[in-house]
Length: 193
Image: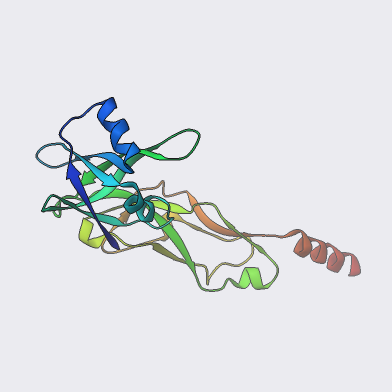
């Protein structure tokens, strides 16, 4: 799993006025949960853009005044009008405890059903993956090589050694359906007989 490093400084005062002043200075108030105690700190808004405005999932190494902590973003709040980041909650990772994260699906290969004129339909773009932090994948690769027209890949079809997918086993990830052009070609072929 990719890791991005940011640094923060502890907050002396925790309140609305203090948070407003931080935002005016270009910083974002943040909280770190999951450790022995909650830590209130502030980070530069520009440092968070690489973490928040990306489709990728990544761990965050936070340096809070010399103390380095491995974490993930648990929640983020935005201003309703100008999309400014107002607050970020981080969750501290424990190397011995499994965690669940939404990991992007990466389709690999070429489907013979698509080559024949079928339409590839991806129903799930992310899967809930449960794993130890060291085993968390960057993305879940799903091969579409065996997909003919009318076939699909479901969650139950995927098996991995180091992590488990917690979505419902019947959920369809990707399928190949009959396209309008293929349906018309089949109808014309049936009329020609």
